[in-house]
Each structure stands twice: as C-alpha cells, then as structure tokens.
Image 1 (cartoon, helix red, strand yellow):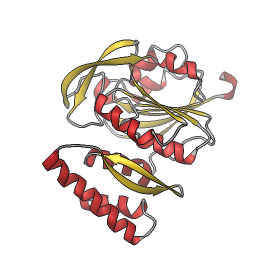
Image 2 (image 1 turned 90 degrees about the vertical axis):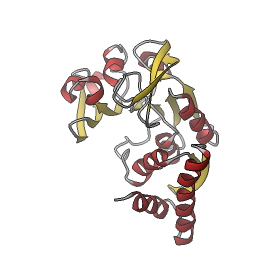
Image 3 (image 1 turned 30 degrees about the vertical axis):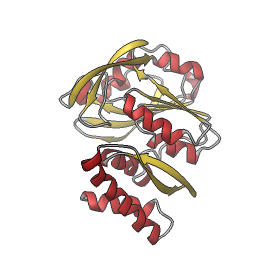
Image 4 (image 1 turned 120 degrees about the horizontal axis):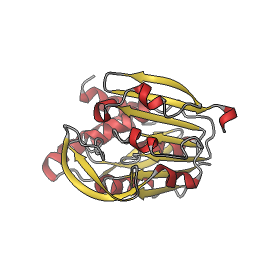
Length: 257
C-alpha cells in the first residue's frame, strides 16, 4: 500500500463518518506538505478510537505510520485483560499509551521516552489523561546520564548505535529494576536494540506478569532464543519474526509469581 492509501486507511478507520474521514485525510496530507515548508512541528489531528474522540499531535509520516500500526493494524491487541499498571518503555509520541489509556481507562500508565523532541510531543498527547505519567528517561542497564543515538527516523533512536544513527546526545537513564519499583503488571517494550542489555542486567524481570517486547536482533546481535533464555519461567509466544526483528509475548508461569 502506498502512502496515500495508508493515510486514507487511517482516516477511514479513525473517523466516525465519511465526511470526517475526508477531513482527516486532508489534514494528514497538509501536515506532510507543511513539514517540507515549515519543518516538523507538532500539529493536532482529531481521531475516534474505542468510542472516544481525542486530540493527538503528529509531526510527519513516521508519526502517522506509528499511529496506523497501533490503532489501525492492531499491533498491540495481545495485551492481557485489565492490567492495573502499564509501563510503556520506548513510548515515542504516545501511540501505544493512547491505545492503552482508551481501552483500559482504569489503569495507571507509566510512559518512558528518551529522545527530547519525542518526549515533548508525548507530553502534549498525554496531558489530557491524568492517569498517564510521562518520564524523560532512556531505559538502560544503568541509571544516571547515558548516551543516546538519534536516528534519521524519530522512531529509531537508541542507546545502541546503528547505520541510521546520526547524532549522539546525553539523556537521563533509568534501569528496569527502578521502573519495577512502581509494580507494573504489564510492560510494553520497544527500545530499539537495548532490550537484551536491559533485561540481562535486571534482577526484577521475573516480578512482572506479562511482557510485550519487540526484539531488534539487527542492533544487538542477539537472537530471539538468546533473549528468551533471560525468561526461563515465562511462557512465550512469537507474534511475528523476521530476519531483523521479532515481537514476543511473555506470560509468567503461575508457580513462578
């Protein structure tokens, strides 16, 4: 599907009627044109999801594609029923957090994003939801200041360097064990290759009931089997797998909890 088709699909599914879809479609196209002239600034769109209308800020095609993947394609539909505390690691601009807060309004959501520009948009998008707390932190194996590699794509920033890395900056870090002090029972993790190092250095990874984790073997040279060996007491389900990436669902065995 080309980009026009993708934008129309987003507009059609995230609108209440055909008129709303046409309006949203025109707004999405205008955002791309405005970026070329004025730069990538957050611009609001109005969408409907789970029976609710929300304002959401996007800057460019990357943000729109991320929104499409989560709200339209249903990439997170394997979430367990009624989580109480959700940790969103690698929150980007808040597409996953938006999905969770609309489907599980009773849940507390902790959203962690490392890249400063992404974090500012994340705050703008989540300020309407008091149950969401946003943290400017890179999830890493150590706390304190850590190095973050900005990518040519706003969704590819990571503490691990890759071919798409364009600039190194310093950001505050947080360990997974520090995050677990808040007792999340569900963790969504998409931290662009840092996942193996983060969980290999954790002593509390066995405390959380369920994980949904995207693996990036192209960035850390670790196979899916290597990663799964860190969770011996969890049942695993590979939701998809390619040569470079995989999405896995981990559910703790009841006896290990």
